[in-house]
Image (cartoon, rainbow, N blue to C red; front, side, top):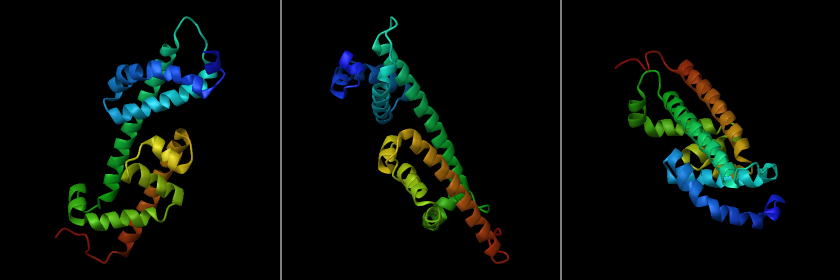
Length: 191
């Protein structure tokens, strides 16, 4: 344990071997209900534990209890992220729908045009922001995978992604306002 507390990565392996399955099944799977999310959260739990191991103090509780706290916090972060992602997807769907049509008809009737407009709009935002959106929403990569692709931490990726969505929304709104200003009289009226 002394080597582990000193931060030796190989010495941390027995802790992982002893508790990973219990954390996965007993905490993360139960909270998240999705094996992929639980696996990502498990990796994040142990990454956090390793980074913060120097702060662990024996106070009558085992290291497992400490790991459970980290895992629960990670699960809550994931659940909040899912909620934000669902809200984001609803927002994006609303943005993609024109004022004259519902989301359903915009997607079913004009999906190729709308997708092209989305990609054109992505081309107008900062390259890093466009990449963050493509990785997370189009390729549906995990936050950890996105962070790795951008060469950042997960926390930094979360900030980049939030800024990316805001930049995309501004660009999308400007595009829509410009399209509306250029539209000929009578276009978009009920047929």
